[in-house]
Image (cartoon, rainbow, N blue to C red; front, side, top):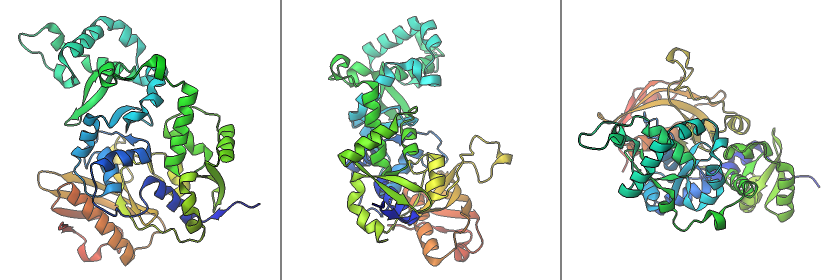
Length: 409
């Protein structure tokens, strides 16, 4: 029996539906949408670059539309979320603590994220730090950056940041809030008082199976080779797992134009008839983060969207092809381009230094309308009153080549 055959466009639409990026938001965002959106994606990658809105806030904006960024901070401090190493440093639902606990208890396997020698060499100071948190409450690494007169010598420590990061990776402390995006740490036994390793611990093989299930659900449509990268798993045994999922009705095989055999997650089965008939349409245009789950696996983005992306902020300026912090542009199911942008917060100006369209993308009134709306909403959400344009493709925004005022109710 032949497999259901999907066009490449339909495959993209199914993936975007799983990610919450197929349609424009139907209503104004609510605080509870922060957790539900992260549950849908499974993970929200953290990055500190602040040239425009920081990545985790932007990833949520792409899906929710206008919302107060502090809602994410509140979700963390309220206990809906936690931070740990997943894809990279990520926010994830605190209910998923058990999925990553095995990593915490085997920090030597975490590579550069944990330095065993450092923790042993500084064991006495680290124990003193733990005692301080126990007695005085949560701390930031910034609390120890400068000597304080009249306090004990430990306030003058310079290696506090490495101590805290080692304790974080080994699960001794957790991030309970962020203040101006700086981590605030408390002892794990206080953050998770009801957790008992002897009773609640999930073995690595079981936890990784659950991670793969999350990955399959959040991707929606996937090649087997795409699954492991989501949580940075090392060569899991996928064939028997996928065969078992297929028998259980959790996934089904489909054939995708130019990509061949792929897997569809059961959550998307109701959309399959529409997709097969070409009636599953995409209406969303949005500015994406370089760390959005749709593009964070560069090979997947290239295979599924024919979108080749490389983050160039760590590349010398003279060698950059597109710019410092380049944002992918989504328009109705396609990654149609990218823009290098900078938010000037003091003057209220979002500067688009350069905008590029992908090869084969034609300028049209519909494309221009979608991009201008997405860019304007992105600017307004950051408090911009004006959007300026510099380098543009020929034919795009010919009526406003230098930019426009932001006036979105």
